Figure (cartoon, protein in one colour):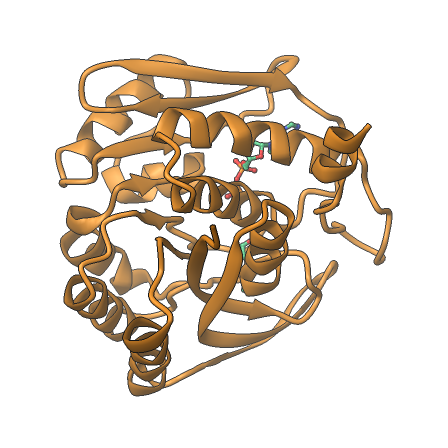
Length: 267
Ligand SMILES: Nc1ncnc2c1ncn2[C@@H]1O[C@H](COP(=O)(O)OP(=O)(O)O)[C@@H](O)[C@H]1O
Ligand SMILES: Cc1ncc(COP(=O)(O)O)c(N)n1
């Protein structure tokens, strides 16, 4: 069986995040990857040097080309840049009836460069979250989407409930930005229960692309027909392996190791 996943995201020339991280992750999990580019970034481990968005028409046409021929078992969105792009993406997702939609609400690169215009945050809430299956904000993104300050696990649970009210079926609030403690805890909410995915916090500066990679792994597993709980569990193991076997490339915040999970499974 060939499972297919489509990523709608920005290009990271440095290869650690964005479309590149998504396609590598799909491939590692034995899912055929397809892409619709929203923007080209000139980027490396030191930061973002340039952002060149594509027109909403160019984004729509790429999705149309994939949807009318190959089809997709699951779809992921990453950097969407503007409200106009968000609107065309939402309309195409509806047109093709794609239900397994994972929205990684990318807003700001780790170095601080904006990847989503500020006024587009409300477009995410009104157009995309109501039709998505899973949303995967990190703590600052969950704060921007809910207008709530998040410090404790209780705050995260409250934010997850608020996001669920927007119509998304499953909310995963990632704990990578919570610097306290020995563990990273990702909280999953399905509208009635909370589930916790915990791993040892790795002390490293090489976390460029962790969010993209994690959400892409969830998407790949959903494409295979796995449940959201199973998909998040695999994604957590995938990212843990990718962070712990660092590649040590570039002069700044380096990328994660996308082949580490496969090599670990093969051992
Ligand atoms: N230092 C770390 N050690 C272990 N896991 C981490 C670390 N940093 C992030 N993660 C994990 O990587 C995934 C992405 O989290 P996060 O860094 O919060 O997202 P983002 O890249 O969107 O900011 C989550 O599963 C999180 O728990
Ligand atoms: C094109 C693009 N998309 C997304 C990110 C976010 O990366 P991260 O996963 O580190 O939050 C990025 N830096 N560049």
